[in-house]
Length: 127
Image (cartoon, rainbow, N blue to C red; front, top):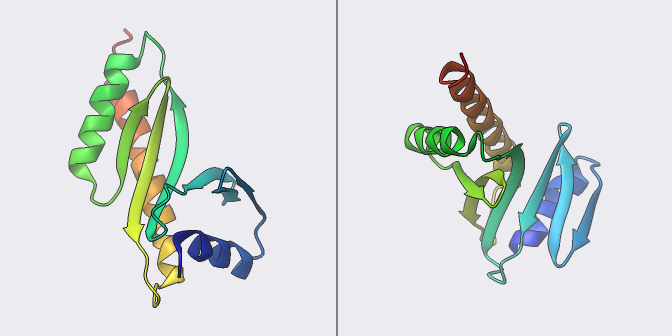
């Protein structure tokens, strides 16, 4: 089973809509927009959610928050890319891949985003 087939099966099993653009799968799960990036490695499942706008004013704090969350959380990683922060999970798929574990991955991603916002709120530089 290829990574794209895994995410499409997951979405179709739940009656969710998706689109394919440039071989990437775009979809909404629990009101959040995600992308399954297809990096030409058919076995690599890479789920990504863009969730925060980085500005010159919050850039340093956002980097610090992302670093903190990356140290606290397993599997899930936050990355600053241009003017956004991405949360992502990567996994290798195989013929017997358990599609249902993707629900846990989405929970892990959402928890990392919540931890990021908590860090930003609790470590605000604003007086």
